[in-house]
Length: 365
Image (cartoon, rainbow, N blue to C red):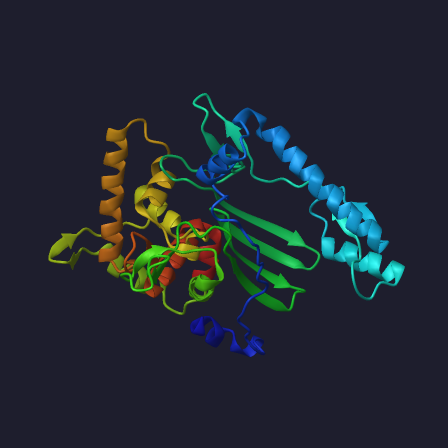
């Protein structure tokens, strides 16, 4: 980030870092999973096939009780037919219209998409709700969606990268503020060095990041690191080093961990495709793994033997990139991120690969 600030310091008046918003949501953890729900339904003696009727009955009871509270307070029950519409703005409009300054403003009801259950042939519950991406699809063992989209809005242009429901976006808000924002909705792929839950004297180890308040500091670290990597990549676009200076070392064999690593050929199809993949914006959030690269490079494997062959090939490719100091391994994980030199070199190479000959000739002249 410092390099980006130094490069554009004449246009920068200040830098702010912090939360845009934090959403707190209570969850009954023992119930918010298939096993917990099955145990609950067994306790209340509700069959799986009757779950829909049972849940609708509970919903109607909650609605009736809520309507009684609104009626007692003399406040309206308003149905919102557009779920994405901001409920806060609706409440503010009603409060202004009715002159409400304290207490209940209104009860808002709406139908919103959510996760549900399905009973399969073996009577097991499983969550639904996984959507296939419209573009940028991946295959194989990669369980997630990789999406990048660019939108132009009245308030400015926005570029957004999404990976497994987490996103990293950049937009020029009101054409005056450059904003880099990381949003973490799914913590499944992220780690934190902590003790096991319920064991205050337990062994410290890298464990799954939790959604609770206790792990917010780690979320801050991950988000800030993603933002800074993204800004560093933007700064690398305007590096003062020549393309020859950046690529010449890569085009020569090197020794790494006592073994010889071949030269890279940035202009060859195979090496060029590899550089394109590791430079995906969504990998700025939490790095990439062998399986991520494999899915984008080969697609879905036809059988386990082919999958192992592809995985081994990607392992060799990652070793090659590490040998040339383009990527580095994230400690205690199986993930990799671009090095600072890697950002500069890969960005310059990919830009040159996409440049038109006429433009390069003009620059040379």
